[in-house]
Image: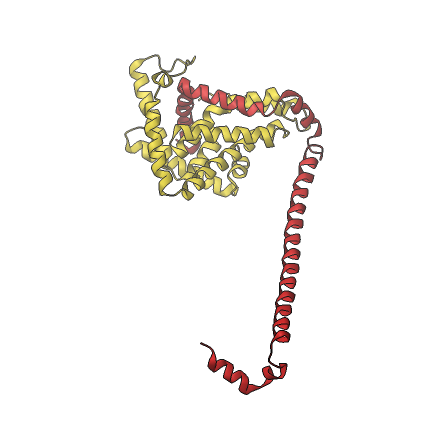
Length: 209
Length: 126
């Protein structure tokens, strides 16, 4: 399997100087551009609402630029992931505190969203990838993607966090532990359980990876 | 297939999914990024980076936060002292009124020390 290029940018930062290299404006911008899609997906798997996921990602980006802009570039991935996970947890905390009338209002708000529905927004963005060149294959791929994403949303939150940070964001065990605020042993356990649970859920749907 | 291989296959699908985000979502993400970066204009970045690790940027904010804490404490202490002063004035006024009432009464002061008189007062209360 070909290695994915997502962390090339950060690795390049590490090799540029022997002492910690502080993030500059272009580097921060490039980092956020590189991580934003996965951050949105991560938030979406957790909160299961696109607008809320966008809010969570925006909060995380704002906190990173406001409070951690002076940190070394190599620390940005771990810091951002930590901020993102905290933003997701904060969302759930706030949601728990909300009373019944707020739930009612949000239900009314969803109706408004339906009225503001813009079909143009549902168009997929242009991409250079050709994985969807074959229509039948593309359909099958999109079905697998949908099943994987559904399986991810059904995982326990900590297992999902560990899996996404460790394998999708490609943080090492120590960085994942720091981002999650737990021990390295817990990260390994969560990751192992997550992979097995995902494989089992997909196998039950007739998908063998 | 081991754990790492399974994870890699799953994340490959996730990469594809992330690459196919809706145009509207991408636009909103781009706006969010621009808003975040707007907090960090170029000159500010340079000065913050130059002072990173020192107390250059943090010291004024911390001093301001300390000032607010001290002001809060001052207000609380001032409130307590004022309340106690007002309480002592009130007590002195009550004593003055009682003394004035006793002194201006036609009854001699000794009458209030007489148990029989006190018993009669209690009985005659409505």
